Amino acid sequence: MGREFRRGEDGYEEARRATVWNARTPDRFPDLIVQAEGEADVVAAVRRAGAEGMRIGVRSGGHSWAGNHVRDGGLLLDVSRVDSLAVDAEAGTAVAGPGCRGDAALAQLAEHDLFFPAGHCPGVALGGYLLQGGFGWNGRVHGPACMSVEAIDVVTAAGELVRADERTHPDLFWAARGAGPGFFGAVVRFHLRLYPRPRHVANAVQLYPLEVLDEVFAWAQEVGPTVAREVELMVIVHHDLEGEPEIAVTAPALVDTPAEAVDALAFLDDCPVQDRAKAVVPEVEVTLRDLYAAVHHSYPDEHRYAVDNMWTHAPAAQLLPGLRRIAETLPEAPSHMLWMNWGPSPARPEMAYSVEDENYIALYGVWQDPADDAANVSWVADRMGEMEDLASGIQLADENLGQRPARFASDANMARLDAVRAQYDPDGLFHPWMGRL
Image (cartoon, rainbow, N blue to C red; front, side, top):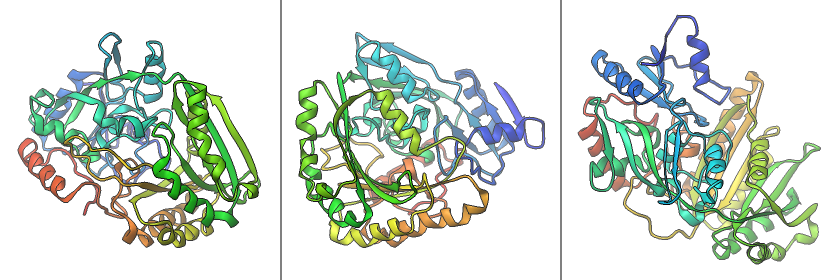
């Protein structure tokens, strides 16, 4: 059944901490940790938990800021070592284990000129990423990555390994695309639909002083709906190299030709306060590896994290007081705020994932000294709480449900999730979300 560690035994604490990338490991302690090496280990662990009355949390190897999988008591199933990736280039499909890293998958797919909308941060495994929706590279083109999941092989609460897709166990498949850390099964394989690899990757950056925050955000929201879907327009409030608050406008473009990138990024020249920019870096060719490195700079290893978020379509005039408050209270670097242009989104297929909006705002408190825990934890929850009347919901990648329960699925879909859970996990073997509305 793979290696196992009981609470109080040698190796337990190391194994527990290894299941949370966030250095702020939760003060929650499962009775047993199982490190699965393959499908048989996962089946055995689920059956054992059912027989012994242990509730299950599953970890695949992503960031999981909140550590939803780490609970008091029960069994923590670590599937990060179930990390294979088999590519069928001719069919344009792949089969991935839940522990397969998104950046590693993209590198392997590139050898076949194929692509998948993997996550923006290096090291994030596909398991939790796909279950919660999956906001990744060219996600505005391909939609949340869970839309590209065609089937899953999953161990149910009954200890049965089943294939779930649109024809077989369709309700379970529906739930797997969006239930996130509240999913009631242990996935051992994801069957993925792939896409042609974008042949040209470019980026452009503009840096602004905090004094023009109102003008920059108002402009970004105004132009957002017209921006090519291959472009990820983001506005980030962070600290510059001298420690001063700064606004960074960045716009990665994953296209096929340099000419397409130039056309797609031309809108950046229309920012009405560009003459007040601290720096303007025009369109330049980069690689996905470059983009991953830039993202990793904002989310470094061995740091403590507190995170929260919101979807919104509120006009800039209503958002600006909250955005200014966020900027004025921004903790030390590399803490930051992200505003992302996402919509308008096309119609989505039937799946549990059901809340998204025009714009996405997320706060990331990032620090190293445990003495700063309370200040950073309250910063993200308080600032998002102050703006929740302008939010249509949250997304589960950056959830903070244990601190601030929020809406992450439509009312109808939450009711259906409860019904499907009652069917497939009537005894509540798998832990649900830490909070919900």
